[in-house]
Length: 260
Image 1: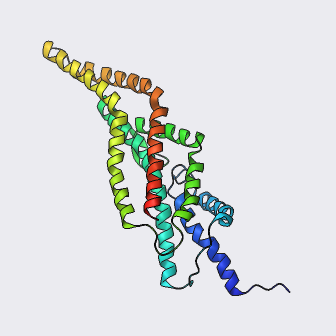
Image 2: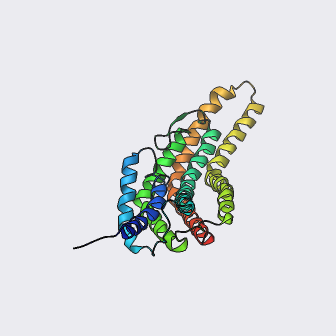
């Protein structure tokens, strides 16, 4: 008769649960899939399916007592690792949102905002357009598959255990805010510079002809020129996305190797 001991069942469950905590936390935070557009049940089901597929490819899992403090610490470590990887991928999307915010403020559309259905926050309309384009490029270029591959490789670079991420990794994540603002500024710099030239021209016109109503003429003209500049800059949007996404992937790799 085929018999299975309780110890074997615990080992099988542990071999499945350790990766599940990291994968599930990653899917709850990662772009597109981790947004509010995808229900929690679907994200959880996707995490279970991915875990079932990748468990045979992972290194052997350590054995811990189910009711010990070490087990709780390991669970927290796995949740933290998955959340960190998903958060770094989110920074890629927020670069374009922040860059669009800078452009919209310069062209006079900073007041035109709407609720982002993906994140549940209020963003400018131009930022929502940029965010939609980034999401489409992310899916078309198999960005979600690349992130899942990085997640699976993280089990070899950061094995399941008590070590987890090193303190230097959290310092790198804090410094990623500098890259976020610098990349957004570089992305929006051509449009902001063009609109700044337009504003300078209206300033000179106001000094030359004070009787002109600068608010009645300059505001619609600046907005029209801003829309034209945004339309002209869309031709280089793909190149900007590729450069920023490459830097984001390199940053994820540095975090993984730094946390080893």
